[in-house]
Image 1 (cartoon, rainbow, N blue to C red):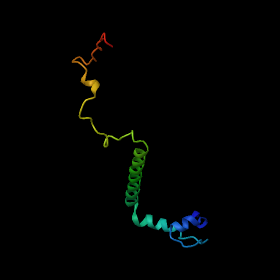
Image 2: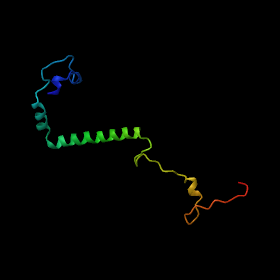
Image 3: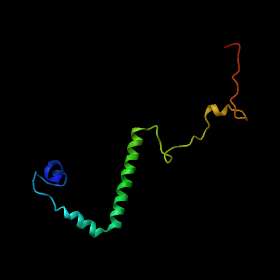
Image 4: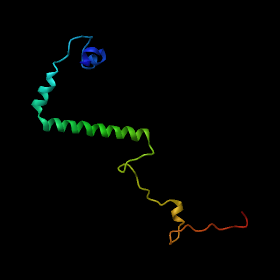
Length: 101
């Protein structure tokens, strides 16, 4: 078992010092799965996956602020200046040529 060999994992689960003894019997997880049942285990797994996906999306949005999801994208209420210049046919007007330029 990896926990038996890793002092950092032992500290993480609450040990105050290194111990070569196993922290729990490996069959404990089998007993937990049997008591909970397949439906509850599946529900737990789905919740873990959903939370992981949400956290990954938040991290991605923080790392790439130019990328926004449809939920966070905001619509412009005013049209862009270029679109204001378009005529009824959808074409941009030709620039006027001034002699002063």
